[in-house]
Amino acid sequence: MPKHIQGVLALLIVTVVWGTTFPAMKDLSEHFSAVWIAFLRFALAGVLLAPFLLRASKADGVAGGVLGLMLFAAFMFQVEALGQMSASRNAFITGLNVLIVPLLGVAAGRMPENRIIIAVLLSMAGLFVMCWDGGGWSTGDTLALAGALCFGVYVKLMETLTRRADNMMALTAVQIIAVAVCAALWIAMTEPQAIDRTGVEERIRGNFYNLLYLGVFATAAIISLQTWGQRHASANEAAIVYAFEPACAAIAAYFWLAEMMTMRSVVGGLLLIAGMIVSQWRPAVRTAHS
Image (cartoon, rainbow, N blue to C red; front, side, top):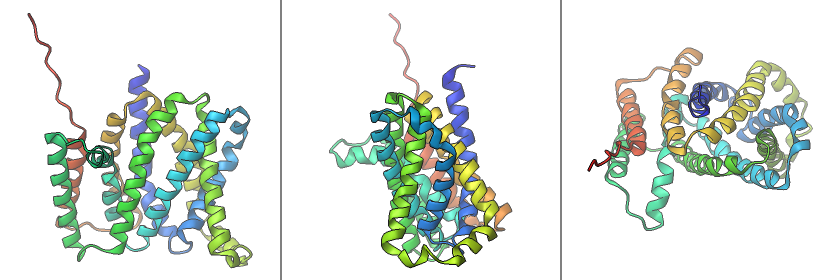
């Protein structure tokens, strides 16, 4: 099987697993703040991947640090939003990250193609339908949208930096440890009194399996797979695959949290997914024959 196809399949697996992280983090948000979830999840993954740091070059260290900072920002917005909205709605809004790259081009003065205009209209329609169903735009929606922006930039950086990496696993280890370090510094600055609380240990024991799943499987293993997959697949292909994350999250939320989606939520979600796919759709160019 060609490396290109393997890369796309790897990203598909990543997307399915990402969908399951929304209800898992929703559970954890009832016991931990967003920064504590980030620290515990990425610290566990960082311990597992720490041996790969021995192979890291200076370039891998810088690239991994940049990716880690962007991923930390995206994660913080996402988890903070989860505490104020349903897991499925959070996933749908987060999925708008596939529109970020073309919209950044508009901000730089480049007019979008017709397909981008159609995609934006579909996505805005989907957001309107979902917000109307949920009683209007909320702070949680704004936080989720900020997370989508950060994650869109992160995905674009991944496309560039993974192709320049000297060692893929070293790059992955650095970015995961960078997230854990950022979270630890945030806790030290904003919640210093929480570091010595015995209650943290009790909550960790009470949520051990959620943390184990998120840290070992959904972070250490899946981010490693994502890094490898984006090296062999284009950003557009990755965005199309990631567009199906909201559907995976909604299914996971149904089985994990028993969250029900109304017809308006379903229609809004379908419009969002349609906008995401259209934003990346490029019709085949016919070759002219003499």
